[in-house]
Amino acid sequence: MMLSGGTLVVFLPLLFRLSPIDAFGVHGLRLPGWLLYTSLIYCLLGSLGTHLVGQRLIVLDYAAQRVEADFRSDLIRIRDHGEAVAMLHAQGRELSRLERSFMNIKRIT
Figure 1 (cartoon, rainbow, N blue to C red):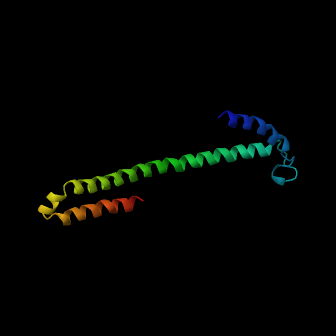
Figure 2 (cartoon, rainbow, N blue to C red):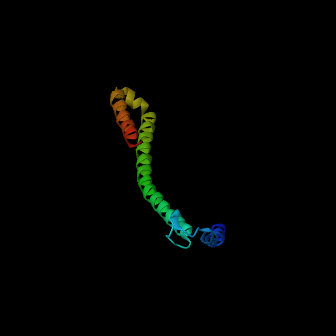
Figure 3 (cartoon, rainbow, N blue to C red):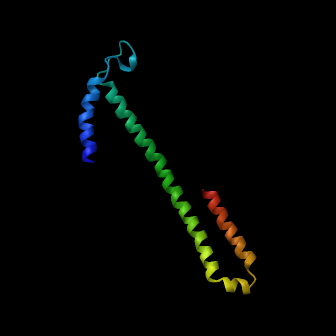
């Protein structure tokens, strides 16, 4: 954080001074330090866009982890109770349950 703040303090005045007199190359459009203002606006818009996209990704990641955990739980349950599944001839039901659980994973990703 200290390095970023130091870099900001050093380069902001430099960017202000190095800005051409005519803003955006338009003759007669005078805006001192326009490169500084443009870069700050660009930075703010980029940060806002990243924040908006990131919020959506958090929700999607949580949902993906939930359905993947459900699938793993089903697999462990079948492994732990394999003898009972075999004795009850419930392989078909367990397979359909796993297929539904796996379809949830495919749907979310």
